[in-house]
Length: 255
Ligand code: NAD
Image (tube, rainbow, N blue to C red; front, side, top):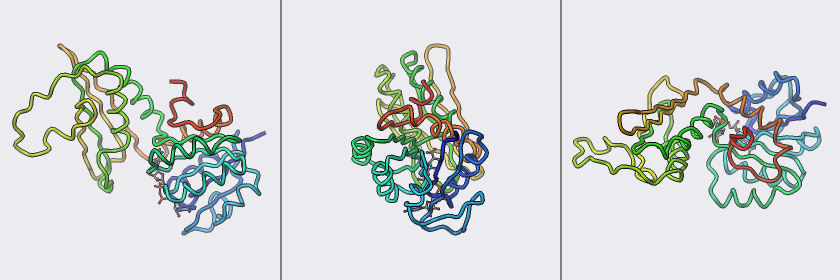
């Protein structure tokens, strides 16, 4: 029996991509589409509704949410109340939100993942594994020129995980910066993060690590929104097996 999937934010850029990916998967069935401010009437042949109730009426097992944090704060408790699993790509939650989701999802499960690109999840894991073997490391994140925040959430998470994996980093030798900011922003454990905003790019990151006579460069590239879909489908298939609340796709990938 296929897994019945509903999508909230179904008229958005990510939501439409998710609907198409679900329809293209043999073991999943798209049963409901919700969007509060839809500029289109239907997606993949399904009418788009403004009310969450359609998700329960359609018997959704899993609901994928790609909206905004303020909307997801209302949607997620509703899904928990109705015993529906949640796969959440929406970004912008604080620690309090995550604590609330952790306590709310009891009868059904919830995954919140700020990056569904499998290559990005692996890049972060590899950087974390490599960290103890090197004494210098810097992160370069490269994004499209419409991104207004810096550094990216993925760069922040990468730096945090590398800092947690090793505290033995060499001090920054810089004593004079001709252009302020030339050495990037100082992240946890002094790991420098450089944010590039380049027209034509999507989402990319390099982690460069070095020690005596050798360097390691780990690079990840998301070329378009399709890069997130294998991770979203993996989450829809695995959510029933991960009780309660999970943060990050890593646990679903077993890495
Ligand atoms: P978008 O603006 O194209 O789509 C968001 C959709 O949510 C819109 O159609 C909007 O009408 C709808 N929406 C807003 N409030 C709603 C509500 N109360 N109920 C139902 N629908 C509502 O944005 P996007 O590019 O699709 O991104 C959506 C989210 O996904 C953002 O938070 C973004 O940061 C995040 N994102 C996450 C990943 C990841 O891998 N986790 C990747 C890309 C984007």
